[in-house]
Length: 148
Image (cartoon, rainbow, N blue to C red; front, side, top):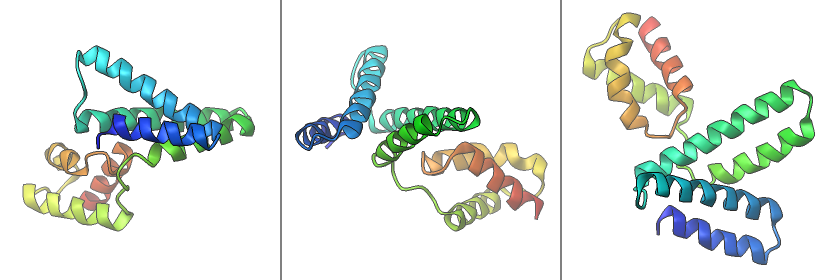
């Protein structure tokens, strides 16, 4: 079952359960998905679905940070609830240890030894991470591996 079908099934379930937060969040994701399909002039593949969900979650995280900076905890809590729902459709994130192990493997593979070799590591590493870790976390882990 593809992402769109899963979302439509979950939307029906949320409507039956009268879960307004889940219903509204899923509608928002479906709307973004529909817009992306229009832009692409056809259905999205799994990789594009994942990229779309990552963009949505990144926007929600940025909104949470802005609301918290403005002391609007009510709005931040709403965005956090939406983020939890969106993350339910994303693959599980790498733990810090799993990410460190993957970084060490790629560093050894490309023969990187200093921070200047980060440009060699990242293009090989990012496709392997494929949405299971934030880019900021990945670059931090690479820097740590090349420093020490």
